[in-house]
Length: 353
Image 1 (cartoon, helix red, strand yellow):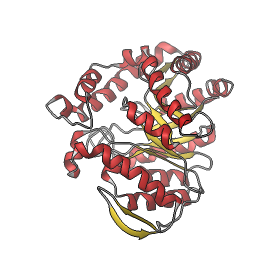
Image 2 (cartoon, helix red, strand yellow):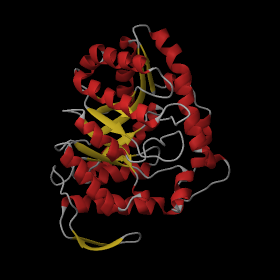
Image 3 (cartoon, helix red, strand yellow):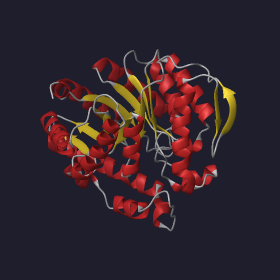
Image 4 (tube, one colour):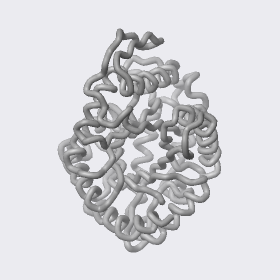
C-alpha cells in the first residue's frame, strides 16, 4: 500500500501571483484533497526568493489547512532548526497539534541555501551541529516537562513547553535528507521517518538501506517510514500531460538553481561537502531527465501508476508519496482536474500495491 498526500512548494512571488490569491487557491486544494481521500498536506520552510519564499512558516499554513480539512495529516516538510529556537518550535508544534485535533506530523531539515544562512547570520559550518542539537531538544521539550538545556547553541533553565502536544509523547517526527548518508543514518537511529527525493533509484536504495539498517540496529519496531516527493500532472492523454508540464517543471528547476546559485559562485562549507558539484549538476536537470528517472509523475493514469510502482520496486520501497501538483505557473483548473483524475484512477491501485 502506498499512501499519497499533497505537497505545496511555492515557486512564485508577487511578480507571478499575489500571496493572498496563492494561499486561497492552496487552501481550496486542501479541501478538495480531503474530500478525495488524500492522506496528508505538506509544506516547506524557505525564505526571501521565489523558490519557497511564500512559505516562511509552514506551521501557520498548516494551522489554516487544519480548519479546511477533517482527516488530512498536517506535515511540515520541513521546519529548519538552524533558524528557529527550539523553545519557539516546540510551542508552535504543540499549538498546531491542538488546533488540528492531533493531526500534526513534524519534519525537520538542515537547510541548504547559502543566502538564507547569510541573511539570518548563521554560519553554514554550524549547520549540522545546530540541526542535531535542535531536533533532540525539540523532541525532549515535546515529550517531557521541566526540561533544562545547556548546549552549544541554546541554553535555558527548567522549562515546560506549552501547549503540551495532543499526541503523546509527541507527534510523529521526520527528517528530510537529500544525499547525506549521515542524515539517513541519524533518522534511523532516532526512529524518525525519512523524507527523501526520488533521485536515481539505485543510489536512493543505498541510502534507504543505511536508514533501515540504522533503524533496526537501534531496536525500533518495524522497518521505518519512507516518504518520497514527486511532481505530478495527470491527464487522460499522456502526451498532453507532458506538453503541459514540461515548461512549468523546467521553470521550477530554474527557480531552484537560482535560489542555490551561491554554491556555484564560490560558497563552500565543511558541513556540506561536495554541494557545489551537486548544485552544478542540478542546474543541468530538466523535465525530460526528471521524467526519465521517475521523479516527475507526468502522463495518463495508467502511465503514472506504472511509473510509481516501478520506482517503488527499484528503490526498495516507500510508504508515502507526497505529490507536488500545483507548481510554477500551471493553471489551477488543470491542477484540479489532475488531482481528481489521479484520485479516481491511480490511488485505488496504489492501495492494492
